[in-house]
Image 1: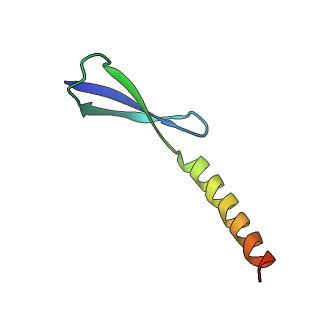
Image 2: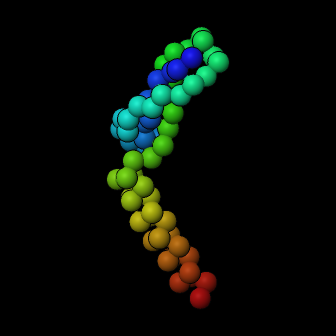
Image 3: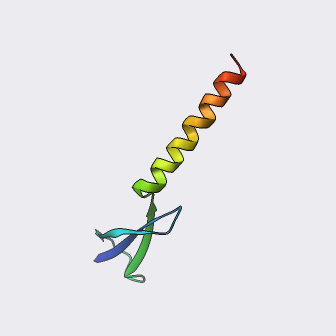
Length: 60
């Protein structure tokens, strides 16, 4: 059976698209999976780099 899976950003809940998957589960024909959108990814990476930089300066 083919099911539709909506892909949603875990951080901001933006709809990122829909994919079809094959499954044997016939009880739920519509599902949701999570990922991260490019905007949230960029913000998260900026925060990570800032945190990494401040950690490196403190222990240098």
